[in-house]
Length: 149
Image (cartoon, rainbow, N blue to C red; front, side, top):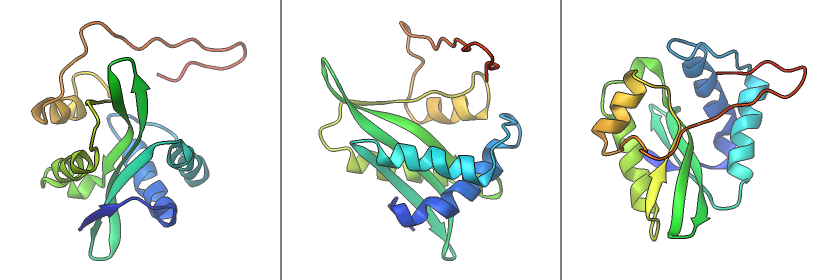
């Protein structure tokens, strides 16, 4: 069952987020506190909107982002999306995106950041996304901090 992402979902979503992104291909180092804080920040952003997947009463995946105004109209930035590793490849990610798109009334487009040339990129391309031809992501480390890539 897919329904709206709520504040009450943060703890379960943080656990899924941590489990997914601490594995290949991302190999991040999220702990539950930092994962929950990340998702809470997105949820607290004006225009935030998300959906979550529940199977057998447990949260197994989610998509979460926020609406932004651009000169052409309103766009949706998909900050985070993940499905438990054991549930991937069963259509749940596509279902989350479809449910999210149905809620994005009056929104011109969705944009996101993901790793290049991996399963995630292929998933989004199959779902109708394309690589932005005029944009790229740039990163600058501030003094005393490493760049996370």
